[in-house]
Length: 335
Ligand code: SAH
Ligand code: SF4
Image (cartoon, helix red, strand yellow):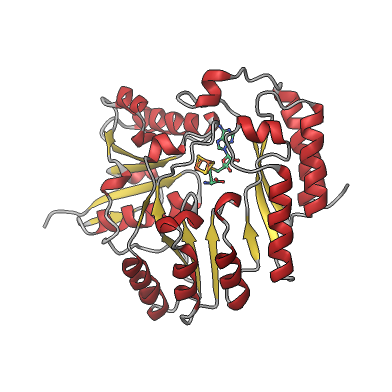
């Protein structure tokens, strides 16, 4: 009898990648591979990569080099966001590239968590925020069919999952305005808690607010990436709202759902973010009172508009300083 081959999977980055990895795992299990928890013992190492910041991309190259140094016979499969970029081709002699798009949604995921089911509802992004590489790495936004998503939700419920997270780069543009309808259908099912990430300020419809208000099993912590509280920076970022519009949206949601709380993403040190612009971000954060913020220091990504047009002119020290200011204000609640 031939011994089973083994794989190890390393997942970098966001929830979307974690959800994808659960399918990649199932893909290899279905091909009679078994999973090991130490890459040194694996025949095959799968790297589900992230390229959103330079440091994340460098960790992928570092891991590839370490594996090759340790044992040339270990096969490496590269998937995730780096696999979607042209520059992955330079790795062709070291790794096999598996475009994540080739992992079908028909594969039933091997879920890591026993309580929360991660369920992708769309893939890719059409927004082209000027700093962001995701639209290049993942391509244009494609929504999954509603029936397919609901089937996955129902299967998760049958398997005793209590919580569901609906995942996409911009969930509220799902099926051109169909997100409120989808969310209502999920909420009517026997799920204790439904969350969704990421939703963006420009597509947050009144209908969506009404659905959240009506269904108490929809998470009252809403993730709403702000990125900056300064109108000029927001414009250069190609985000489609002003600070005033963001604040008005938060107020409107709070009126309809008084118990709601917000978490956010903030991009620190975008080119041209001077003291005044940063002060505008602080000011807006104070007005909103976020429960939690994911703070990201700007890192120019080759291929994006901002890397082409603007100099990365906020120093690393200043980015660190601003990071600490916001972390204290929002995450540690010290003003
Ligand atoms: N679609 C989601 C997530 C995008 S990537 C959204 O719109 O929010 C996740 C986070 O990474 C972003 O919110 C942003 O804050 C950060 N990010 C994206 N590009 C970046 C870059 N070039 N440098 C640093 N952080 C970046
Ligand atoms: Fe990137 Fe903007 Fe798309 Fe989010 S919405 S993935 S930040 S381009």
